Length: 304
Image (cartoon, rainbow, N blue to C red; front, side, top):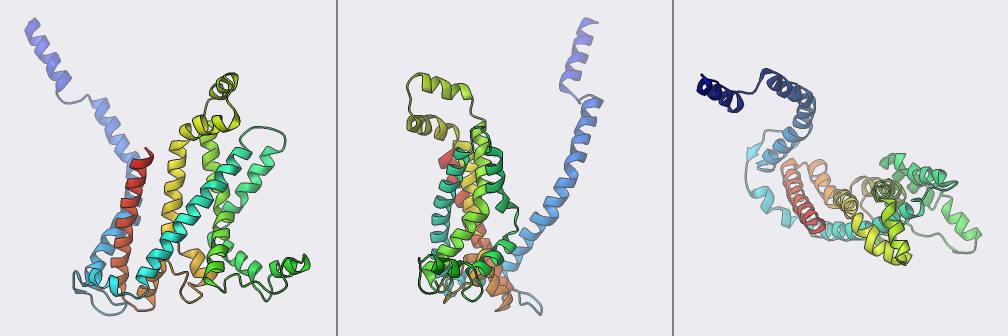
């Protein structure tokens, strides 16, 4: 009798789960179903469609025709591709370094609670609430040589004596675009870093000060090491956003002057809607996606 009960207990322990556990499992699937449907419809299905388009000659009008791997082979023949890759990497490197430095400086500035710090936190974050397209149009209006207010102010202060070509030369167009991105995203990245800074225990700083550590030692040996996961998140977001840059160049500079600010996404856009080559644009998008995933994987392993 005892042996029978023991075997029954083992079957109950290793056999089918109780009904309440099965119910919780079903309940969990039901909770996850809406998100899974949204991700499937808005991400998985378009991704599969883009990969399939990249394997076909897919004109804007007319039937598609399978031509793999011609679309990928023709990427190097695109006259803008190599310049766009070099420009995008250059823009990503400069923007990531400057944006990370400015955001970290702002986060350290408003880290401690003192009178008026809430105002500065809000003021630094407010540009992040402006739509990127609206921010690009705002900067375009401010820097316009015909009706923008920046040139008259600089001449009134005696800083310049003639209109500045803010987007008239390649270097100035890049500088102006980076200024736009810093204004738009520095506050958002500051908020991310501020969350990481406030998660560091205060007792760690107090112990370091009691041991005679200075501000630089505290920053380099306590703040930065403990802030590494948050920095990794911010860097991944910054690099991803920079490699996929489109709005600021399409609206603010329109790729000019002389195609000097054409990003990789703009090349894909022009292939699709100017040359009506959706298959070639899809192939370029797949190459960009693979490179982005590989770079983010490398960064995550390096910063882990």
